[in-house]
Length: 604
Image (tube, rainbow, N blue to C red; front, side, top):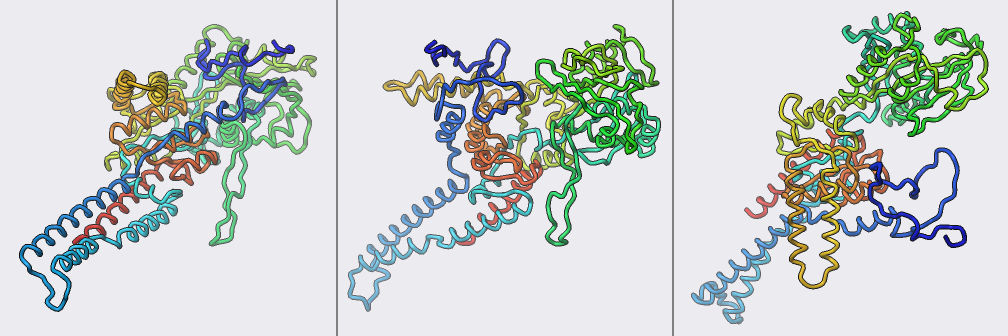
């Protein structure tokens, strides 16, 4: 070290996967990273174009989506018209000179000059001068119509390009799904409950897994209080909030529009909503149970915990003994396997506390596996009670000797209109593929639910982990760079590049679902489809998606996404919905049809 500090050469800057398979180095912090806890000192080792942001800017500079189908066809049309009109004019000129017909007897100009003027006039007359105006007006009207359907067009030519789209590469979260985690199952020892409703609304009911959900079944559970300890524990051991707020004004009526808005962790928001469906509100619980200590969630522990004290409050609407008579309660929430290892007892559906034996523990694990196989995200909760304020309130002290209270399983449900939109696109000859950062089982389950993959049938090879193509993508990028920099014979490099292209193309031809995708994988995927002759539409919302959005024939950014993504995109979805993309493609085809009809009219 120089002056007690490491030099750049002594840092491990090889940005490949480490032994644990992570994509970033454990001792690196990148610009834009938020520090959630702790403190430390950092040494700047890269600035400007050598940073991650600089790499992104470099990729954007090199990416080109190519010529739009409309521009290419108009260019071809102009070439054909020019060649045809010139050829006809030459023929007429030759015929006029050779036969002497068409000479103006009143003109003193020689015959060849008169025929030349006729030929030039025919050439000029063949040019459809109204075509640019027609195309511009059609695209402008189409842009207005698409905006009314929540598709904001940023580039005029993209209106027609949408009509030529043959494949849609879409994200999952927020586009195919609602973008709002929703609890669908609750498990309180030996009994499973199902929860209906979508999003953050209070609409929805709770009942036994074999029962029909109705307001009466929900009220019966509220009255019995069976699920109050479990849902109350989940609610107190979370920081999320879901409130009914004024989000916009209705200009026509001048009245505020109410909408449920969530703040905080997405999974915790779902816990707040299901607790409300069962009559539990945070503000009421906090009047009875005051938080004294919180140990935040960490990826190492995969848990968080809080210590609450039962206080006397005449304003409380909640049963003050939902956790028993002890005044202090430690609540731990987190990954089921981690929480279960800390539990010594469990609370049954009848309210009795029983020692946790190996059979009971295995029963819980079986339920977790059952829920996880359906792509549900499962959380467990347990509590520990104290007669007085414990001396130690750190995670080691509070997260032990727990009583297991139950499980909550949530999922980001698919949008109701997505299945019909995918089928509509399929019938119109537009394929759909899903690219998501989720694990493969979750991605496959969602794809089956929305009709992207068949529930019954052979789906082998149609859903893959992007690790299968990431190496080929990196190889292609390296080969392109080497070819660009190489001097002399490039035959071997070009042959290797062609072979790599073929390997990727053979994979993408059959795949409909890409899981565990990174932004760089999107570039590999969209370029592969373009090589196969597709007009590709790519969605994205993050800063790292900008290169893929710019490289696609049609880049589609989410209205809730980053400004960088919106700046690189051709279209912005104001409602983030996949159905809006399909509607925009339909409008684009109408525009292309109108332009074609006008061209035929001008040439007729």
